[in-house]
Length: 177
Image (tube, rainbow, N blue to C red; front, side):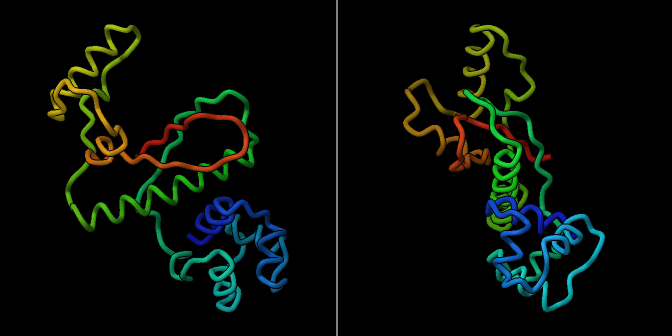
């Protein structure tokens, strides 16, 4: 499991293999790190501890299974993101969602996401109005303006995550699979 975790953490921090090797004080090469990420080799205990320290996590985290699987749906953007930046954003979101779901399961076990309009197809303004009315009714929101949409969404276990990124994009959609 270390391969996926290692790559996720490295990308989330915006580090290249070379930069991570340097962060570890040169104890391993970028080629060795690449082998760890491709699951072609396993780090020694000493290297594992240095990796964890360089990535600001506990060494046991590198061996843990992800608590959720996150799927990428798409970006709404004005200009194209580079592949590297897209991977970095996806890694940050995966890490954040996994932590939020883990905490949610501890604090409120058994409470899943309930989005009543999820199956509705919205192609027209009337479809959007119908979906909004159904959601307001199901979530007991009333008809008044909503002061804080993020609070309403997160109250219903829809996670909203802000990510600082280069490039010019306005939103990304992910789902917990």
